Image (cartoon, rainbow, N blue to C red; front, side, top):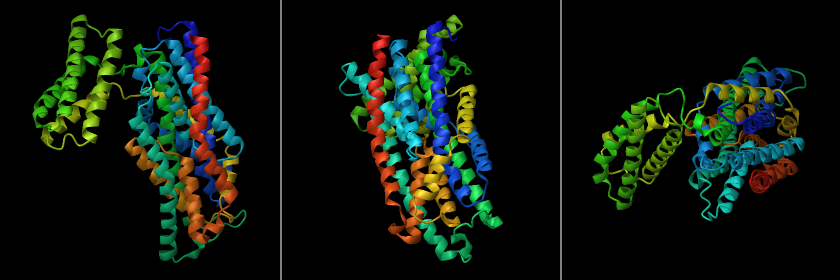
Length: 469
């Protein structure tokens, strides 16, 4: 497979299976949040709810784009791994996958709604740090710290948004909704009024789809990390696109940057743009050589990937810092368009990867969901969830996760929804309505997830290296 020897092929398949196992566990660990409200308000039967949620998780993976998957790839840049031995790369992916699976299973067994996103990111950070230290790189460049900072902020802010916006939504409902039945607790075995039931099913659907489009994409990013690290000659570039077509956007970006250089005020940015032009020239030379040979050489695939990622990252850095404020907007738009075309060669996912992750997440949703559902439905607040509380928490969760997916940032469905449920309880009856023990356990898990998974993944990576050296 992919020109690899039998032993490496076996390990590649095992790594992919582990990534699917992570998404399977993510399904029953995180998606339980989506079905808790419809189950506890008698809006849907448990079996119907988890099948419904699983289907919309499946759709979310397929229709949600790959911006979050690309973000995961950028956190632990695979271009820094392709120069390593295959054995070292296998040690990296196995360490982060196994540590993430262990922590997810442990928190699920205890019924604690911990974050699969936190778990995965902590594992990636741990591996990246140890990877850097073993190479004598004390600047820890094995981790993309700029991306890690953005990811950390999204994981920190999103539960606060869940809590605050749900409180606000409950306050609005209490002010403007005259039909007070929405604020009542469901009666045992009795379905809610049709309009309330429809609203709750709609919010459950929204959270399920949003979860698939965000959390599911983490699995896509994981598998692409595995494929690029272990079989880079086949997956460094999108095989469905003709690499020779890269010449035109590369030339357009080169011309655009050349025109904009004199408009840049900071000399440091001019140094960077000179390096960008050098990488663009390298792309043109590789493409011209490939055109004369009639095909792209294997080593050139990796070189082109590195060139594109360097150009994209440094262009984004200048734009983020406001370096392009003084340049002509028309020229800037042309450069951005060209870079977007170049990115399409590296920011992709084969359909079979999407299908594999979608099935793993969807099937996982239908298994083992009950422990987390009980925590969400019974153990956060002292009183039973009302219709308004369930709908508000899910509506805010779906919106928050959808916004994060649009911006390419990973967030935790667990944290957003559980904080939303807590916010709804506080908005209704004050802090006294919160079960302190459960909230404390969730908070402890939230605080421990990053350090525990970082240490576990880093330790496993060091251990696995002893067998691949």
